[in-house]
Length: 111
Length: 115
Image 1 (cartoon, rainbow over the protein chains, first blue to last red):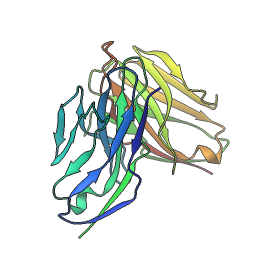
Image 2 (tube, one colour):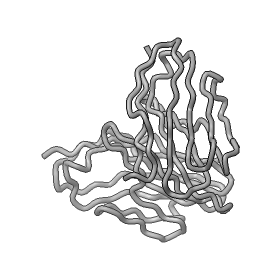
Image 3 (cartoon, helix red, strand yellow):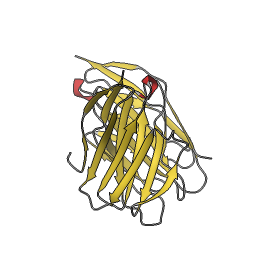
Image 4 (cartoon, chains in turn cyan, yellow):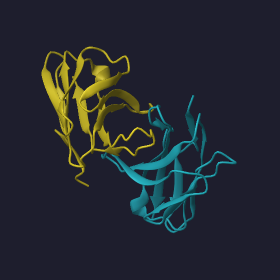
């Protein structure tokens, strides 16, 4: 079956620090990979996605590269802001399966 | 974002009440979903509708009753809930083209508290 393993949180950084949130997966078939973000009191927002190996998804300064050889889709941002404080979910989808989420990583950015 | 809207945003109800959650998607999608997000638990998929037909029910108790009158609207009817049903209920939609890798777009959620 499909599964997603995310870096355990919470993660606390200072403003302008470099961010990495690790995500690895197991999947049958060829998945599409997603990062969703959930700001306090809100629903999930799609942050970025990649649909095939070596694709790089990017949005709002965040990036993640679909690495088939390491079955990973790590989220990175070069300089975080206080407004990036949120919970980040890695997810995958294959044909015929439900969207599978990781457990989420809480990020807090301090000024 | 206004692609998927949910009302109400917050709801407090007693265990004997009947209430309904509403979801509307403005994206022209043909599939809609209900998820439950409880504190310290992974997201739980509850129901899936494709072209207004329910295609998945993940062993959800009958006190939750979904309704999908058309491909733009999805309801979750609630009756005789339990305090442990308190959670954030998220609606999502996607365009299912049979390739199985479609992107789901989420609404802001309804925060439900059952007293």
